[in-house]
Image 1: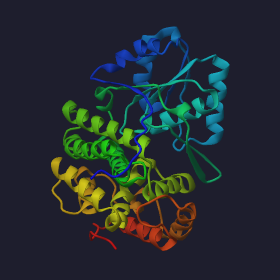
Image 2: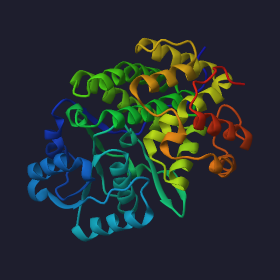
Image 3: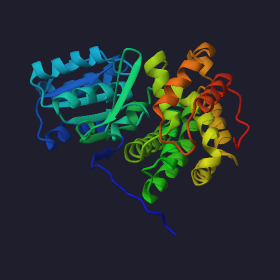
Image 4: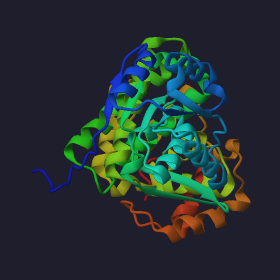
Length: 362
């Protein structure tokens, strides 16, 4: 028997191919745009230079002050540049920070985004925006910030360092895990989330072993695409609220925080989302990570690829646990297991310790 569901998937064009960076110009033409603001941080400079050379005068300005968690004051400068340059579109090149900055521009101006991801963040497939001001990160949904076109080129991820690839990949795993028990899950999104877990479980260990393997990078980027799609169509739970708090209030790095928390958040929810836990185990096993418990399998994958499994190693300290737990509990995120201060505190303390979950948490 199939339970009732709503499957609402906003449209986005996806171009996935090795060498597809060469398609940015034609895709911009397809959108009917000719005056692009290029948003790209320092790590993406070589690819930004190539796009600028390919597009010539169609790039009317370039914004490089890309900052994690999208501070409001910096986003305002980007919006001003978009308006003063007369841009009719935004090209977001890079990871979640570049995409987030482009979304801040689109939210205020309505300009269409063409995204070219270089990490496994997944935000390029969502209508979710997020900005930080006064030690608080605010997020929301707005169809104006959903990129019109996403160009996935696995070759652009070859230069991504192994440790960043690992943390970014675990960030994608977190999207898939929470998508399996989110209120917006449907039969289709359930299948795509499980497939995304399989692809990442198969690809990330190979990336860790050989970061230059294009086959491994293709698997990982394919999984990240499915993760972003899942994030954008289903909703999230306590894990993401914890990580938004860690980033917005304590300025912790986004992907490493996700990596350090997801196994323990999964353990927290394990008895309240049995179908999701079974799908996680099935996806991990199909990808080559042998396990019988979802939280343990996620932790094992993170260890296998060298991703963080402890909040202590990404800069969080025990003195901040009570404050962080209060912020998360007050927000009351939609989650399979009711969220209270004690429960969030337990997740944070487990993540601080970084010990393999016992499995089957009550």
